Amino acid sequence: MMFHSKGKKELPVAVDAIDTIIGAQCRIQGDVLSQQSVKIDGAVAGNVQAGGMVIIGEAGAVCGDIRCGELMVFGRVEGLVEVNKLQLKATAHVAGNIRTQTLLVEEGAVYAGDIRMEQAASGAPLPLENKSDAERGADPVSA
Image 1 (cartoon, rainbow, N blue to C red):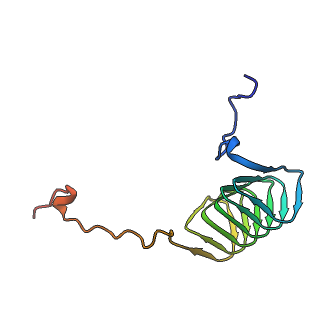
Image 2: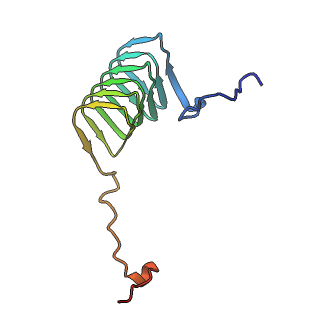
Image 3: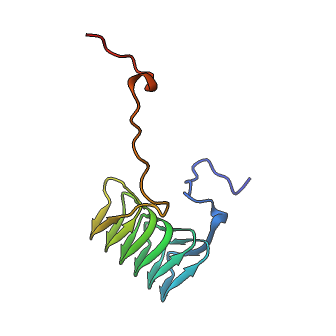
């Protein structure tokens, strides 16, 4: 088939799950709002809000606040980031404050700002279990 190639680079989100794609030659002045996922390979001067994932490609840049469920940054972001999960890839450059529950940073990513890690809306973290050696199945060491 002509659409399949062996050297194909896998996208982190299925292509049909990305509702909006802002191409590398596209420049947007204003806010971007989507109920689904957004991939930005161009430039956005404005806020980005999405119900799904936002992916900033290597050539992509956002100068504004970003609010979404999950953000994956390969390119540049300047502004406040409020997400549940943030992934800063090796080529990422982020300047601004971050509020997230989960943060993954690859070696090479550049970040300047404050990070505030927040708990999930479900409440406090689960308490640690205090099991005896027998309950854990551990072999007690005899002296």
